[in-house]
Structure formats: C-alpha cells, structure tokens
Length: 220
Ligand code: G3P
Image (cartoon, rainbow, N blue to C red; front, side, top):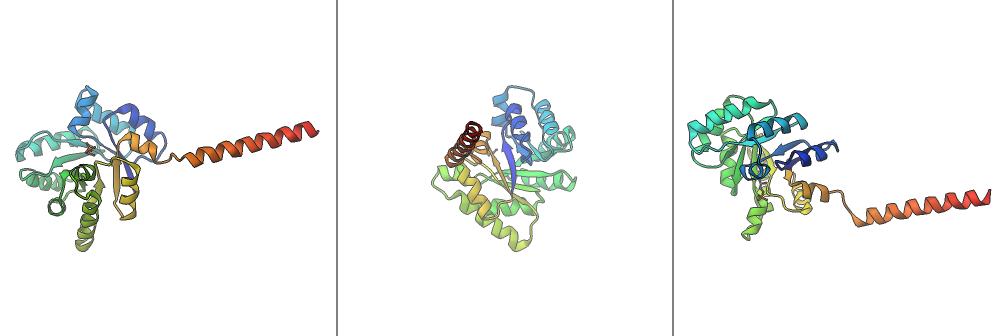
C-alpha cells in the first residue's frame, strides 16, 4: 500500500518524508488556503521534497478552463498530478489531460458510478472520500470495496486513492481490502506506528539491560 500525506504543510511533509515511507502528497484548495502562501510556489516546494505524485487541484469549473489550468499546473514539476472534481464539465477535462499524458486524480468521488466514469475518462487516480461518507451515515469503506471490485472486473488501471481518512483504522481497513493508496493527515500518519505496549515493552527491555549491566559491574 502506498502512503500519501493529505496536507499543504511543508513542515509536516518534510518531517514525514524524512522517514522514507511517504509515496506522494495530496492537497486541496482548503488545505492550501490554510497555509497562506502562493499556491504554485508551494506545489513546487512540495514536489522538491517528495519523490512521487503531488496532487494540485484546478479551481475552474468549466471544461476549457480546467484543461488550460491543468496543463499549467502540470508544467510546475514532473511530480504534479492534476486534481479534477467529479462534475460533468470535468469529464472531458479528465480525458483531455490524461490524453496529454498528464496524470489526473479525480476528486470528490462519493459513488461507484462516479468512479466508473473517472476510470473510463482515463484518470490515473480516483479519490473516494470515505470520512465524509461516514459523517452522513453512509459506509465509506463499502464504497472502496465496490470500486475495487468494479475496477478488477474491467481491469481498469486507475488507482484507488482512499481519501478523507480520519483515523488509523481507515488505513488498516483500506489495506485489508486492497486499496492502492491511503492519503492521510499528518496526525493519522503519526498514529500508525504508535502503540502503548511498544513503549512499555521498550522501557522494560532497557531497564532490565541497565540493571543486568550494573549487577555485572558491581560483581567485578
Ligand atoms: O484531500 C481530500 C480529502 O482527503 C479531504 O479530507 O477530512 O476534509 O474530508 P476531509
């Protein structure tokens, strides 16, 4: 499973990337707006830190403008993946940008039919938002299961980028059913390796080791 960081914070990206297990980054207009910096400059800097796809979202909602914007975003860096929302006007834009050889991540996906369209239009990634579905009493992970099944049936190459992840179990459940990528906030990323028994166990190991060494030293 690939791990993407869902953030616009360079500090978080640098800290996570230093561990060597970050495969990409996703941003969205809300995340970028929080940073209060120039969008393109930020994307370029993220691309320099992470050796993998970095999603940058178009802001236009008309086909021609989305294509133009997507082409401009793709010029920023070879790592840029253009994020296009799943709206009617976006469908020809996904097709055109993908036809140019630009990787497209179709975002704001909430149903299997939307995911089929993303794949048919040639998207490299599809982003079903599972947390937001859970928020409205729908089964987010069920959508991932459906999309994976459909893509397998037709051998679609579009990768399922599990998005709107809220906690570590979202990552685990997505991995169990074969989700290709989990994109997560830094907070969730950090929760992945933490376990109180690991800390207690390590404490005990080190204490036992020190005690044994002290005993040896006093016996000499
Ligand atoms: O980047 C898209 C998605 O992951 C947003 O997550 O938590 O705002 O629903 P959230």
